[in-house]
Image (cartoon, rainbow, N blue to C red; front, side):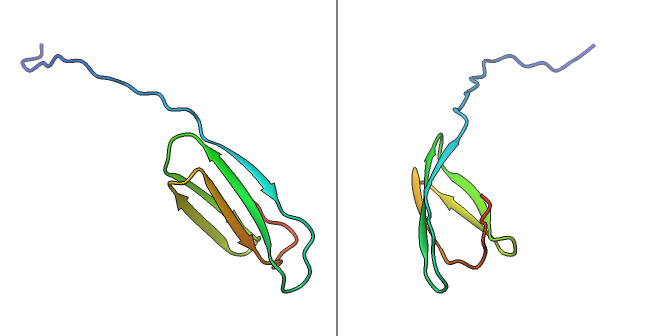
Length: 79
C-alpha cells in the first residue's frame, strides 16, 4: 500500500546514431605530415579518440567535420 503517488507525462527522444567517414591520408616520409578528414553525422557534440599505438588523443567537437594533421610517428593510427 503506497501513500505517495505521482502522475504525469514524459517525452522520450530518440537520437540518430553517430557515424564517421574517414578520408585522406597517403604516403608520407620522415618529418612530413598528412591530413586525414573525419566527417561526422548525428547529434553534437562528438567525442572520439585516436592513437598511434602509444599516445591517445581525444577530440571533442561541435563541428560535423574535423581535419587531423598526423606526423608519421607510427605506421598505423587507430580511430
